[in-house]
Length: 607
Image (cartoon, rainbow, N blue to C red; front, side, top):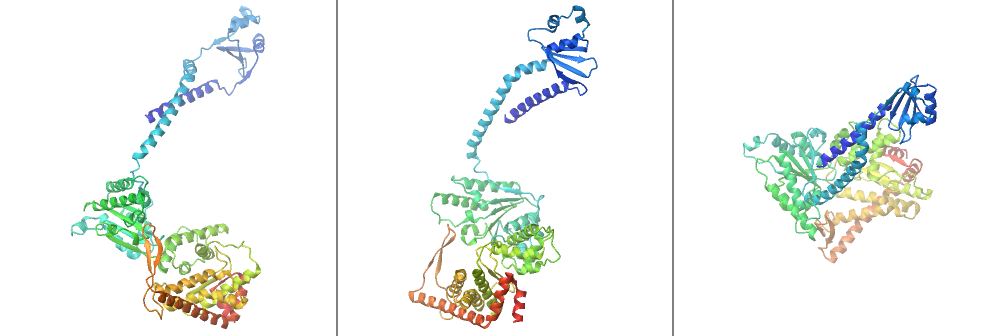
């Protein structure tokens, strides 16, 4: 009905437009100019025999000049004819007989249009308005029945196809998922030997590690449809809506089988049941129950693989992880140096790079970066190069982007006094020297007194190689490096500032972790202290249970103090012995604001 009325209105408007166009073209003559004249002037022109033809249409009179280049137009009185008007102006019958007069009758379409259009056009618009209002009200009333439809998004394999070649690193994860790809391509190969492919694949990893990208790559490799939906899109305030959306999403995927149904951030609905508070949590649990039922309901020959992603696998419901549901759990680690280099190559494929760009060096400077962090780094470098009016991205922009991603943008406009600048220079010089000379400390890469984010200055320290384990001596070296800024201020100015507050917090927390978490205390021995309690529905640490006596608590405090004092003494001895180098590095920082490791080595060698 709506389509019919739209077509009707379109036809009326088209008819009016053609009528206006026809009237305009009918009256248009490019070789003749039209002039409006008074009735008396028109009679004079006729009397002087300057008119060759007279055309009358109702009360409108057009006079054509004998040269056919001028057209005059005038109007008669509504109750008087042209003959009567000529008689009134003194024309004899012989003169009137000699005139060429043409009478034009109004066309039927214009006659009826003039009658019907003023009547029906307002009615059409009123009817269209009420139809639109009624349709909107019906849509609002029908929305309650469309709540159970899932907002699942389809990524066609023919458009924006992603394969394993577009995902750098993650070698073991790709090998695990290769079986899923082969099953989607050739399920009989597995069914003939009685093998059952996992119905669910859970991708676990840190944010930005490439879980969604890897899931899309599986669909691209198998050349099957990829249905994507977020876990939070299932839950609504109405009871039963989430379960209905789950059924709709699974039915949609089954109709397109073979296919992949990907649920992102499944922890939004997959948290452990029974830990909720209030009715809203009951709706989430019903949604989870429906997912469990749907995954159990898959037939053996159903070629639909459910993939899900989360960075909190520890809070998922055990029923979701049992065999028959998410049988296969794949951990995605953060990329190592080789993987980071490959990721950088992928993200710089469509970028104009300078001849000085060394992606290996960038990979060395970015330990702990995820794939998303590296993509953001390359984009920030491109933006920085554009701001500098460059046509290519150089190594300088890439290095500056690392610091921008880690610490924030430079704040060169921040006004500081010369005294504060001097304190910051000695503070960062202390960090740099202790990191440089203390065995076991992370390798120093750069030191700067340019403010970034909340930091007045920063010392960039990176491990020399990929490390997954850390020893007690390395922890102690890091604590000493953290305390070096505080000690440097104390040595030079015989006073301390608030700039060391964050360093002291990190040093204290690290010392406490050595004693209570890692069992690295020589006096308290290899055991942990304190049991962390975590509320599942909030997903964060609430409190730590004290599972030790007050005497043990005193020993813990004493051990933390001992570690801090030993590290303080070790760092102070280095700074006292290298006092001249400390002054030289601080002076260079005040003059140049930023020193790379090579610059620091040059200053120390000169001394």
